[in-house]
Length: 237
Length: 303
Ligand SMILES: Nc1ncnc2c1ncn2[C@@H]1O[C@H](COP(=O)(O)OP(=O)(O)O)[C@@H](O)[C@H]1O
Ligand SMILES: [Mg+2]
Figure 1 (cartoon, rainbow over the protein chains, first blue to last red):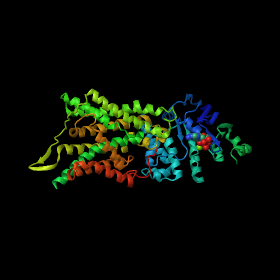
Figure 2: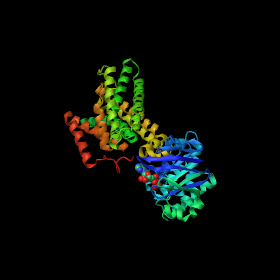
Figure 3: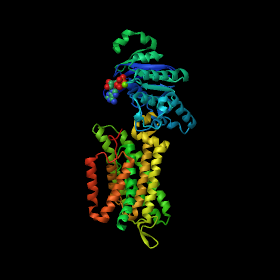
Figure 4: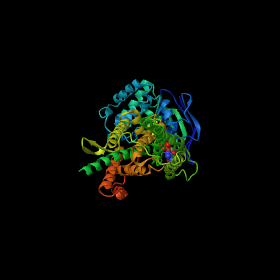
């Protein structure tokens, strides 16, 4: 279980997260929804060690992540796909994927080869152009590459920051479909951050609604999806 | 014709040495975002060490290897002992402003240069020492014909091309190289991929220090070894980087060869006194027409 307890994160004097507590269950999809500026990205970046919290604790399978370096957190099985198709455009598609598995080369070389092959099966769009610079990819393909880069590390929990942002509905469907399948079939734990609440709540088991850095709802996704008044109050639709 | 070929070979061999200096500077720049002004101080220090070994009648090649290791160790030590702690300090507000945060490590590298030069002055009494070349630096003749190059020119060109090719292969074909490139291009994505960017950066410092030491040993037969003997090499190497573009590895190497040839031709056809004027003219022309370097593509550094 990913457990977040009393997490407070500040930028200078302003708090982006204020005493946030919730947990994400193993093998389930938990979604964090909220308007722009609610603190969703800050939450994921803090879990990944890119931002130090002012106070609070984040535990994954009972080990404390606060204070660990980002590279150590990935090695502990927690992978982040950051906001905005985070790939390195100067590197080739193949290099971007391999990058995510470099740290496993020494201990699990053959599994790295397997994992990379799996990524090309999962995202056939990437397979034809392995040697091309990833700057040649479309937005949707870049997002797939960013997800593939995170998945080759064989994470136990995948954190996704608005994977659907700016993508065509058909691509969003493919990406969300793949994430759902990974969770249902391979038991991957998913923490999905979305501004597009309906897309997220449709696939998620559990939903957390953030507003101005505070948790305002923490319920089964179905309940949250049905609560029209709550969504209207915080998301405006 | 003979004069022209002599200028060509000398320029190429000197250009190769400048290329090593430039490559070392680029590696640290891309990895850590600073111009390491201490680089040739490290090389000078290891040249003194090598010279001490040679003075004890130990084989040149042992001295060569020790100098490479010493240069690398010094580079690694500077990163771990000076640059890393500086990055952590972000207490007072003036010092933590973004421009100061970029400037402080550069100033520190100048300070380290001063320390290395004073230390060399104290340890080796600042004495200027001659330094041997592994092969003859005198004009080579085949049969009765005098060649326009020396054995040492050929040695330098071959050795350095091998090093340049090896470095390129390391960066482009190995896992460590991929980690180095990823860390330089986008540190955040690299860290999120599990790459230990801090250690990778230190590796860049080590590699850079070793390359600079080789460069130092290659000019030492001509310049001798003294605390300031490599200052000029640093200036030329840095100029090569500016000409070629600090972000472009082969751009800087090309810039180095352009400088090597320019200096050599001015020396032979014009007068040694005009060398600086020539370098300066090239530098100004590049700054005006291609401010991010002859071979830079796109915008400045991607942090
Ligand atoms: N690097 C930063 N510096 C200062 N303030 C920031 C920074 N990143 C985010 N914030 C602030 O933190 C709050 C939450 O932002 P963010 O986590 O990006 O929200 P979301 O991802 O939900 O849109 C916002 O008020 C934003 O202005
Ligand atoms: Mg966000």
